[in-house]
Length: 302
Image 1 (cartoon, rainbow, N blue to C red):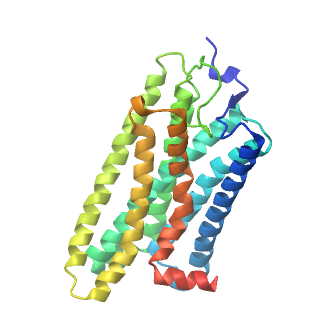
Image 2: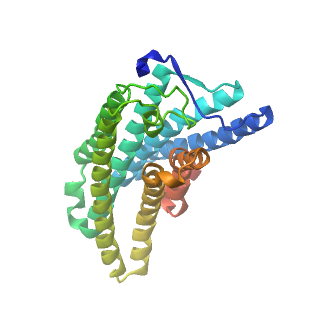
Image 3: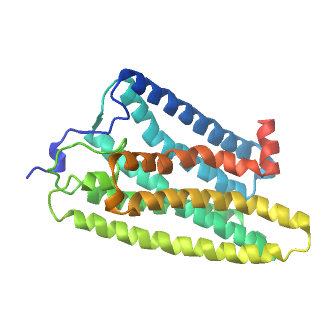
């Protein structure tokens, strides 16, 4: 039985076999990557440079854009390079780094989305206490907690995954290194440790999801009782983008990791992985700027 450390590299799933389709994949991913860089880069610049956006909501949005930039930069450039140079290889250390960064950034993003739901809840349901509860120090601590939770989450999962013996080859049915695909190469029951950790993670995510749902139930209850139509419109303009991002993030992630094995196939796994690792970081800037007048004005200045 060979251990995973005996492999010097892994082979990733190729998007295409012919040179023309490889170049098409490279061009498509290049366009998506540049769009993600531009959108998130503009939001980071706008929030950092416009003093009117120096509020808790936009501070958390800046952190979300940083996480999105990291996520898309972890998976897309390597896939583009493989298509351009007609190769499927990724080094063992490169694969471990990809697993760590993907789990770190996605875990941090989900924690941050939970914090952003809390921010909206306090702003709308407890406006008189907003300055006290969401001061600068509190916001920095909450953002730091989101980043640290993602880091610890990634450290545990990566260390556990790469300690599992592998004997089913080194070919991954995915365009980046993903924990479920690596577990398929295991040759002992030791993979059950990682499955157990994933179950614990799902339980924690479920707890955060329930918190977000309950927050928005109370938010919408308060908003619908507002006598002013302008007040309702302003509240919805700050809440609906966050709700759309949470829905997009959760639906794609949940389907990717909890879909029944009976419907799993390389083609479906590939589509789902693109949906949760590439699409949200690209669309999030568009979703947040679509209904937000303050952000639109700041982006025009940039």
